[in-house]
Image 1: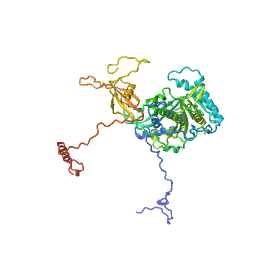
Image 2: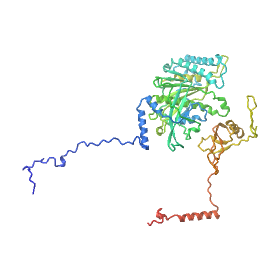
Image 3: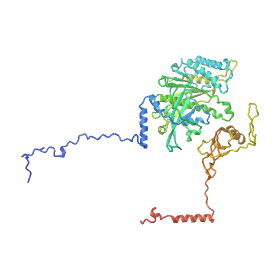
Image 4: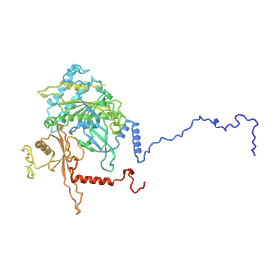
Length: 420
Length: 154
């Protein structure tokens, strides 16, 4: 029996409005269920969890202020290789070039003309009278130390500390003050005497051979603790010697042996990063460093014992390590670190002397990303320019300086006059 | 000074230089256990020698230009025990790492190179080798079975 429903006589078009599927609106925005992103866990004992921990740590360091960055990077203490800038190890400069990814270019950049044969008027910004003043200042300082002061013979192995140290100090301070009127940068500079310069970085890795962490990969850590004789810090960055991209072509020696064969020794202590002054100091960029050669470094003895090549190697290794530490610390003070590479090159200069012989070095830091993960695709290299040792004067006789080398004085003046 | 036991000549400034003719010290060149740089040579030396002794020894007797010498004493283990449960001491020895000057390099040569030993024609060794090879060939399974064992019925 058919059910009797009360249907109308005439059927209008939409009698059953919700019957057909076509009337259901289909262009409503389909709400996708919003799940949180699928990432590996943070606390599990797995390789992906470890990777995520490292990424979180890197992100945390990137987003913090400079003091927090420094303290987070140098927080964990572990065994590290202590790199001494002044070392008697053989071929130390090749090893240090490998540790710091630096290419050595003999001679100075085009900015500093050789100066040994040219005339005195070639220094820009200094006319002949001023250069003559500088020359007389240098002779005065030499005579004061070696002729006028009646000094007793210095103790054994203390010649550098007792004779050349005061000479260099008075020379540097005299030159800084007299050249301050030509170089406005020096007027706002800070001359530090015997400052501390420290730097901590990681480069390369090794597989741990023995112990409870056997077969793990461990990055090799290095630390430089340096005490230059004096340094000049300025408020503005020195201009670059070579553009960043030009350093891609330079060659850095690759050494596959472990650093302890060099010989280099490991210790565990505070990781320090320091330019010579604390963070809030306005003079945070470096200008020039002055180094004294240690007392046990005897040029003539080394040449006699068939180690003539090691004479220059020592100076180069010293300049390399000291300048890398200084420029690296300057870059860290500006917030650049391993995972945030420098956007502009950091430039500094150094002069290493033993009283008679002066060697001039220029360093350009193009990259601070030296650890294994960041170095894989990093074509940039750091650059070191350097000269051989040049004699400043022959000797002091009867109150007169014999054979003062004008070229060396000119180079010194050019170094001081370097400004942006 | 040379061959007898070295007694007590205390050196003072102005004494004649100690000269040793025909020293009774002998150096042993060894292959380095850990990898060393190209200019480093490793020696085992008697315990009484010092760095300066090695430098003079190599320079004067063998005309080898020596840059720097580093020494260490290797302790010989006293841990092993013999059948009477007594400790057996391996002797201590001194090792010297000599870095050569003037850019010279040295690599320890291969003293026992691999030789291709082909037995002579018609000799006993050749027949024995052929026999061993045939035996091995017979022991191998049918290659068409694809490594499956004999007892499995395919």
